[in-house]
Image (cartoon, rainbow, N blue to C red; front, side, top):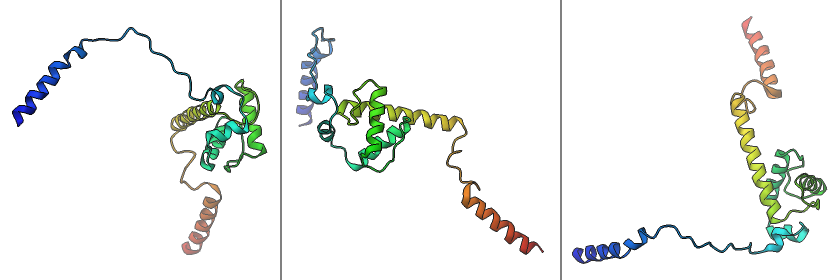
Length: 159
């Protein structure tokens, strides 16, 4: 049985040897258009935004991306007037018609730009000393309260 399997394997290898010498094809491939060209090329409307299927979490992600790119808006998962205005400002800056709604292509560009901005923010924090923004030291109001309590208690028991 092993001999049969070995013989069939050798035959398969010998038979497929011509594939290894075939080389690259010179025939150009057909480029396919996007499945839904209306979504990719049309102005962004409520309908195109609905076709993206943005969940509440994805809406928050869009809002975080807008804020990261300098278009401040509340991050609540709802596209209210302030979010629509931020989207319109982003669209204007990038040469899109300022509709306040996203289509699939704009959503993709926005999320990729926000991701790149997040990477550069992370790198800047690392160059600035790592966790400076998220320090666990004695800063802020809680640290001030703890420091005050510590000095009072320490003063009482040192006498």
